[in-house]
Amino acid sequence: MKRPLSADYPGRIPEDWENRIKPRLLREFPNILLVDDSEFLSDILATFFRLEGFSAVAACGGLAALKAVEKQVPDIAFIDIVMPDLGGLEVAKRIRATARGKAPLLVALSGWHEQEVRDDAKSAGFDHFLIKPVDPASLRQFLSGLSTNLPE
Image (cartoon, helix red, strand yellow):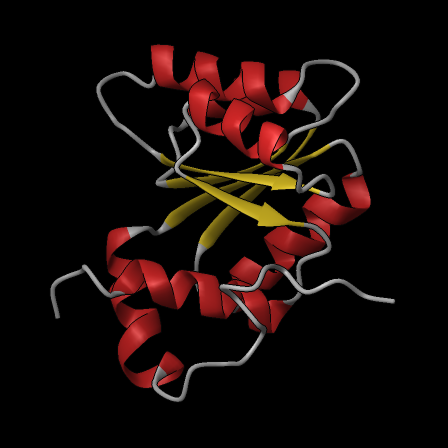
């Protein structure tokens, strides 16, 4: 049985996604980093964002994520929590410490949704927490929530 992204992001594509929401997001958050220890998943997520018009970089693992951030600090980074080389919590801490004055929005991705995991993610510097698996409609719904505070 497929779990929803979360109760807050039920997977409905917002009606004004194309005309109002996406243009604001592209202006505010053009560069996105997708990090997972599954190369397949990070590539799929990057492809989704590229098809939506964003500049997206896929990184397989925490160490690859840090190398990507050295080249360009993203506006948003979606980071898996559990990775064998360097876990997402440590990646988030290091990005926060070395982002060269730019504060990217950090979104934890995890198949674990217990409160302790969420609390650890918040303590590590994550701004949001999404439960895997993620699907395009749920990502659009989540991003729509980010757009509510952006200028028109």
